Image (cartoon, rainbow, N blue to C red; front, side, top):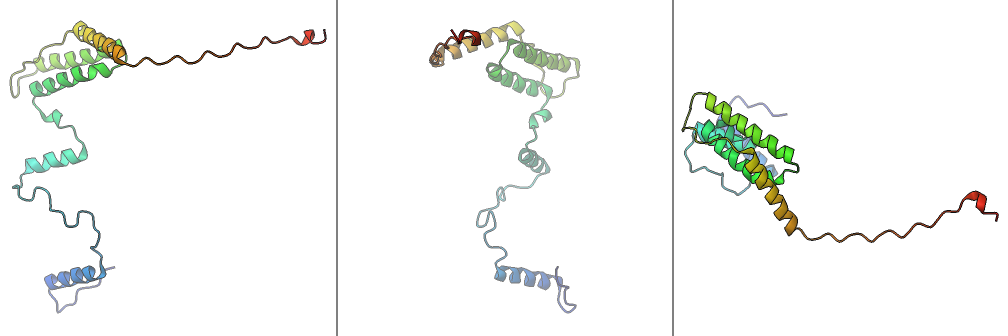
Length: 164
């Protein structure tokens, strides 16, 4: 528990005295970040930058703050880049349909920000591209050696034939 400030001492002097005593005890030794400069100290402070830094540190997806046209462009790029990682054709079709639904919804709403230039994606074209990527990956994959066949199982004799 902290001690009480003496009545004849100012708050500044009291705080400085406590800090000096803690330094003498070594309470500030080996702190993480000791001796390193404070990041972005030379940049002027702004509420927007602070909010963006906080969201980045917390792992918040900032693409939700983009206007619909820019957000949909980014989603389209991510979809086309990540479609090869999907396992089944149904998943590809579903992902493209979700994207197309988002485009249709953006068209129905009033335009905010840059004009909407992203169109619907052709499901069959994306599926065809997915199939070609799968075939290319299968051709590049090294052949897996087949395991040795199991030795043939010995014929079992029936219990009633043992006595003969």
